[in-house]
Image (cartoon, rainbow, N blue to C red; front, side, top):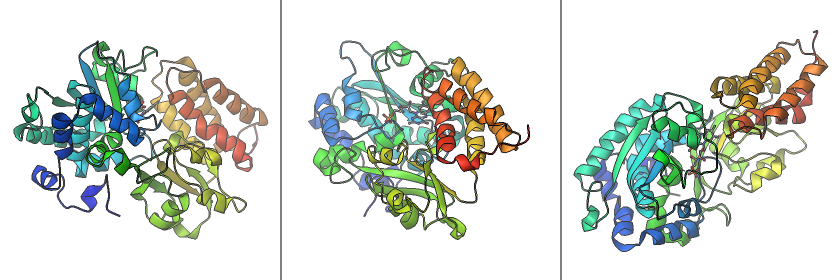
Length: 418
Ligand SMILES: Cc1cc2nc3c(=O)[nH]c(=O)nc-3n(C[C@H](O)[C@H](O)[C@H](O)COP(=O)(O)O)c2cc1C
């Protein structure tokens, strides 16, 4: 099947404006601006069932409809922070199919009547910011950005903004703080960004991959989009596959494809002929799915969509699927995840700041073989004190691997000599 998002794999040089235009580029944006009312675009996206690809899976059209019409200006911000360990899909889109993403951003901007929209990139994506700046300049020259677009009264300008390399700035309100030049820390909600967002104005924040779906939806309609995926999770998804597989990489599959298709099919199976032990479907923020001889087929035949991954005790999130083979102990795995979250906690909420500090001490002690039985119990307690008690989901994320590993792989946690 031809790709919908990773189209550059089928069409060489798709990152050149003339090639993109020759292959139908900007026809969807033109159609939206010249032949559709803004609300009609939102309704079509609602009907398509497109759900946010940044992790939470919130329906995109519904999010747009929260923007109040009587408070202006409106902004759209593309979330290109992509910092979840194991996620590397937005980078591929921006590097090789940038115009499809920018066209999606332009369509979203028209739908909510934003005349200035932003792309927020993690600091390490400096080279991509330069690339997008060049694409934006080409679009301006070709008349796809600027004033009176396609002879209508609609104007649009796009700007890139680089962060400084903080995971927290992928969280949408910390991201807005960062664009405003402040320290990237989450805001208290409510009010939500749809009402009080960037510069205190109504703002839509969407992930890069979410936006890259929009040209297809406008061109082919909701029904065309719904030909892929499941009823509740329509469309295709880019799965970033990494860890102990033979062929790691990005794979575009319909939502509802099985773990077997991804891991054994696309990924060529577990590397070095080892056994599958655990799956983290949503990067470092995942609850770890336990796989053993008793449930191997059940897990591999589970469909990957926003509903069904829950049936094996985890969430799809941004679909950054990390494979863990039986050479790894889960105390080592959570050592890695807690190190990351301890480093990335922004420090605003005490449970996350102090909890991750203590979790790190405890997982290190366990991993080094010096843990007492009390330490393992204490790790559970600290994780419970973090979960659900912070302004943003980073705190929750930091506990997912810890609590699931302790519950599902107790044999990997040993009491040592104190
Ligand atoms: C700690 C944290 C980090 C996040 N990082 C990202 C990220 O790198 N990219 C992203 O698109 N969303 C990220 N999100 C989710 C965003 O807050 C937001 O839900 C998303 O950008 C909305 O876009 P969508 O509706 O298109 O998915 C993160 C959330 C949290 C709590």
